[in-house]
Amino acid sequence: MNSTIIGVGASLPLRCMRNSDLPGDLDTSDEWILQRTGIAQRHIADGETTSLLATRAARNALIHAKISPQDVDLVLVATSTGDYTLPATATLVQRNLGLRGAAFDVNAVCSGFIFALDVADSFIKSGKFRCALVIGAETFSRIVDWSDRSTCVLFGDGAGAVVLRAIDDDERGVIFCKIHSDGNYAHQLITDGGVSTTKDAGLLKMSGREVFKFAVEKFHESLMELLAENQMTVADVDLLVPHQANVRIIKKLVELSGVDERKVLVTLDKHANTSAASIPLALNEVKNTVFSAKNVVLLSMGAGFTWGSALIRFQ
Ligand code: COA
Image (cartoon, rainbow, N blue to C red; front, side, top):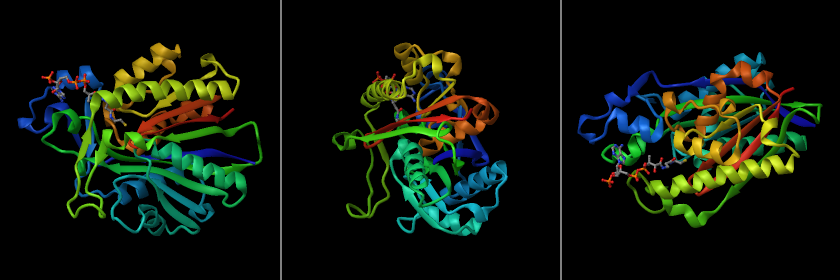
């Protein structure tokens, strides 16, 4: 028994903020942001909550999968910007779509989608559930410090979702998923303001250079681990979807690994870094390519630090 992706959907807030639309007192420029990050614009929630974006993305994924909501028995939302401290955003999505079964959130920040995919895949392989909505949804615009040019320009809001269903085929579907964390790096990328430490809502703080270096190292290490454990080479990768943080991180990965740049998906120019939503949002951009590919590889790195990889075989 394996699990496989049978539908993809996404949702973005209506408001699109180009680099030139950023607050005038920010002392930055379109040129700097494009050159140093590859980001041209991001979507910013104006009243759209994380659960609303997640619900819309999930609904679109169900339509794409052509299945009834009644078939879903598990809802996972990867997010670190949920609507409430409790309950989980996943339960709000479950209510909005009238779904049954179990619903809970997974917080592994920018690696959240791969962590949630691993959880859903493991549940399906164990026989506990048969059909999961795995959603990445974030509203980072609510936690960035809009006076800090080194962080606020990097992030955007949005949601992406996949429908993951059991298949009686060991050759296709989620072939490999590996997740890692190292809490020694917790303070390198942090949003304080947790309810047990303070009453104030927190703001995101980041040691940009350290995060950059770690992301390059872990993207490369995770890709090599995935290839070795599946007796593959970079030539066997048909589509590589890395977490969308900075195009220079992705270029370094291309340089180090030798993977063909044309097979590497870059969508951060349009969405910026949407944390847990970035991978499913990117998958949604190239739906047809995804479903006709043989080996699709996902890579992530996020606060914690957390990192991980997944191999999904569609043909
Ligand atoms: N506009 C103009 N200048 C900016 C700027 C901006 N938006 N942000 C930073 N700068 C300035 C800095 O203040 C610094 O100026 P100084 O030399 O006068 O002190 C200069 O640019 C260089 O800063 P540096 O931090 O070395 O830039 P960088 O090339 O490393 O790029 C990041 C900064 C944040 C874009 C980069 O480090 C990065 O992408 N890190 C990883 C971030 C990430 O992916 N996080 C999420 C992981 S899930």
